[in-house]
Length: 355
Ligand SMILES: Cc1ncc(COP(=O)(O)O)c(C=O)c1O
Image 1 (cartoon, rainbow, N blue to C red):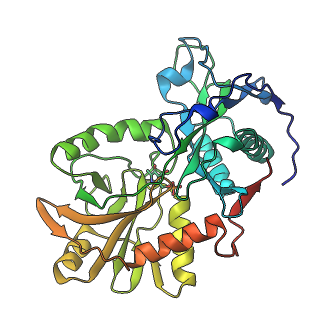
Image 2: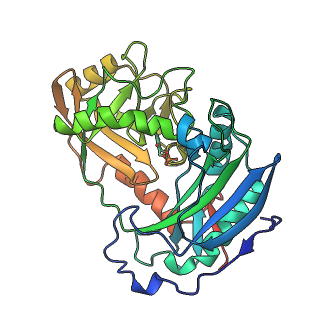
């Protein structure tokens, strides 16, 4: 990757990294020493810099605080078996970031700036990339409108930032999900395919109700008829019907997950059938009843694979038998082996960072 952007670096005089107990990390609690920030003004990105992590100073008129022009990404940097650091598929996150920006009428970020900012930021924070296998440094690029104006409009000024948090091994417990048929995360033509803050705000209330009813997550259905499966919480959903990996086709109401794409590629290359197609609630229920739905799982950056142990459809719970040699665990292992360098990265997914 060619380094072209001009990023000023102001290092902290007092790193906190040696005070951290890396064996007790809670997701998203602890920031690293620095943050990246670039400002969009007068039609261009400027003042790109990495500075010590600190609070921001914003006008209470900042448009992003009022009208929801805020987007984000989530990805991870890993310590590979040979000690090198790699970021997993950052170009996919870059493409999705600008897709989100376009949908939310925000300034796009040039590829050089996005990738170079990530590279320099992770290189500077290299000591924060945990060494224990399964741990990683979670990276959070985000952008929001800073222009100070009341009145609904697309802003002319933005901050593009990157912050990071070390995360421990994510041993995902099997989850219980409920097929949601009352509330909606995203409608066709809406913003479901964009990673914008509003999608997550809208999902909190139904998720809270589902939790109260004893479920870990909801399985979202289409907004119009609630008869087609879409995705789950912060993950894409996949099923093993017979020996075929099946996942709903992407649409304007489903996020194009990087993990989803990676898992589908691996499943195909490992010789399994793969189908991206419509999955109706009726088909899923029938397959749960007749036993041809062998596995169900969420796919996303946080957990990689979250096994689903039960699916509730209109009050009826169907249990899934989770076997240690399940296909989903084989896929997870293959993905992790590539990320950590145990298996050759024939796809070019690992972006190596030189400290
Ligand atoms: C709504 C939603 N769907 C799917 C995903 C999975 O995407 P990825 O695999 O890129 O993390 C996420 C997480 O980013 C998400 O928030």
